[in-house]
Amino acid sequence: MSGHIQLQQQREQNAKLTREIVTPEGVPIRFQLARAGDRAGAFCIDMGIQVLALLVVVWLLSMGVGSHMEGSWLTAVIVVLAFLLLNFYFAFFEVRWQGSTPGKRRVGIRVIDGRGGQLETSAVLARNLVRELEVWIPLRFLVAGRVVWPTAPTWAYLLAGAWTFVFMFFPLFNKDRLRIGDLIAGTRVVLQPKVVLVPDLVAEQAQLSPAQKSKGYTFTEKQLQFYGIYELQVLEGVLRQTPGTPGWFEAISTVTDKIRVKIGFDGLIQDSERFLRDFYAAQRSYLEQKMLFGQRREDKYSNK
Image (cartoon, rainbow, N blue to C red):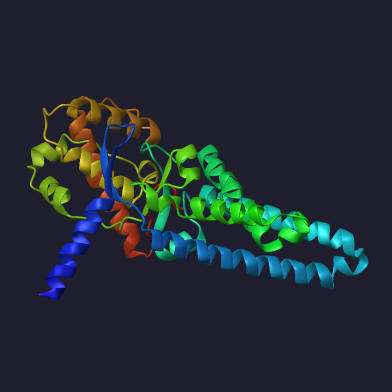
């Protein structure tokens, strides 16, 4: 009985964290916001990596170049390297790995654009540079306040502590679990969706008559190298919409145009829905074949 209650509570919690956004192509996508514990765990892992990297750099400098450098210069170099590491570690990985860092990958979360578009570099830089104001400035003052401000009064430490507390726990006080940086950049941190292939649409495609199949669209291997499993799932969501419903024709047309341009398809498209269904079947077959050889591509940003 207790297990059933716990399961019910878990479902209710998941429902509270579930959101839906509509992509620029008009496709609704549901996702689950990352929990505070997941974000904290990812942050701790990333901080551990940064501290370890900084210690290694300091050791190398002290053993190599640092032996020929005055102490004040060595300290200045270390301070600059620490600043660059703390401020651009997150930005570098989130740009390179499309919203992920080593810590985020480990716990299964990622940063996405809050409007359903591609995560832009400017948004990544904005959300991470704000972290300097959110965490590092007050934290440095708390840890090394006497060095920064030798005559600092007690109220300054209390203010720095309150500042750190408010910004650190700000995600707990809004329904979308947003940091100040997320509000400014228009981003969200979500659970990494499990990317799997489902057979339904391909099974439906297999039921077509030979005459229907012969009239379909064909694609080259080169044209199938642009997308991954995640994009295939989004396309499936478009194809499962009921024809004739509000926005259906616009979504089909928009997605068709984007895919046609992306893959360089120069043939005549008379039936957009049929084009998308044929592309779905061909893309799925291509990805499954690659997976048989151990080459799994989760999305279009993964290596080909």
